[in-house]
Amino acid sequence: MNTTDNLEQFLPILRTASIFSGMSDSEILSVLHCMGAFVSDKEKDSYLLRAGDTTSTMGLLLSGSAIVIQEDVWGHRNIMAQILPGQTFAEPFAASNGTALNISVVVTKDCSLLYLDIHRILGVCPSACEHHTHLIQNLISVLAKKLLLFNEKITHMSKRTTKEKLLSYLSAEAQRQGSLSFDIPYDRQQLADYLAVDRSAMSNELCKMRDEGLLKFDKSRFELLVEMPITDDEPDPNDKG
Image (cartoon, rainbow, N blue to C red; front, top):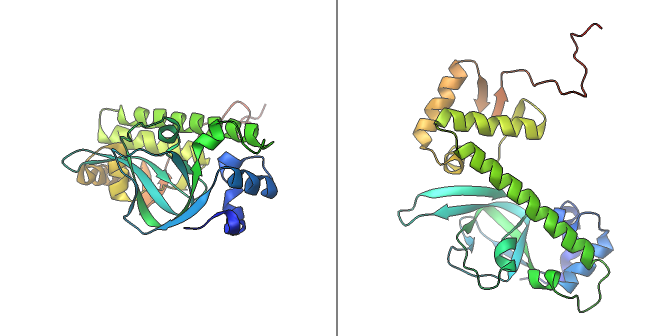
C-alpha cells in the first residue's frame, strides 16, 4: 500500500481521468492528499470488490484492467463494464452509506489502483480546498456518463436475437470510435458475458455475418462492411451541386 508521497509517478494517467478533468498537476496532488488517497496493487483474477460487500471508497485504475460483473448462485456471469486505466468504479456504492454491492469487480490484468474516500469529496473539505467544487462537478459528470453507458447496454440486451445484439453493440462501437474498423475491449467469452448470450451461439453468428459479407474480424479487431452514414455537417462526396 502506498500513500500520496509517491503519486507523482502516476500523474500521466491521472491527467487522463475524467474525475480530474481540467485540473493541473499540483491541483490533482492537492485533492488526492485532501481525500486521503492511497495505492494498492492486485493480481489477475483477484477481487477488488465482492457482491454483498460495502465500501466507503471509490477506485481509480492506474494500470492493468478489471471488469464489473454480476454473478448468480450458479456462477453465470454478466459483464456490466470493463475498467481501463484512468477510469473509476464503485462511486454510487461508496456514496450510499452501508449499501451492499450487487456487483463484483475482478482484475483481468495485474493492476495498480488508487482508492479515494468519496465522503471527503461529498462532504465539507476540512482544508477548504479551492478545487473541491470542481471535483464534485467532475464526479457528477462521471456518474452521468456511466448511466448513459448502462442505458446503452440495456439497448443491446433488449434485442431479441444474438445477431441483433451483436449488430447493436458493434454498430455502437463503430459510432463511438468514429471508424468502421475498431478494437473492442472484450475477448470472446467476455463479449458473450456482456451481451448475456451463449458463447458458441455468438461465435456461430459472427461466422455467419462474416460469410454474409457484413463484417470481418480477427480476435478483438472488427471491421463493419458498410458505409458510415453522412451527417448533416459532412458534405456528400457524390453531390455535384
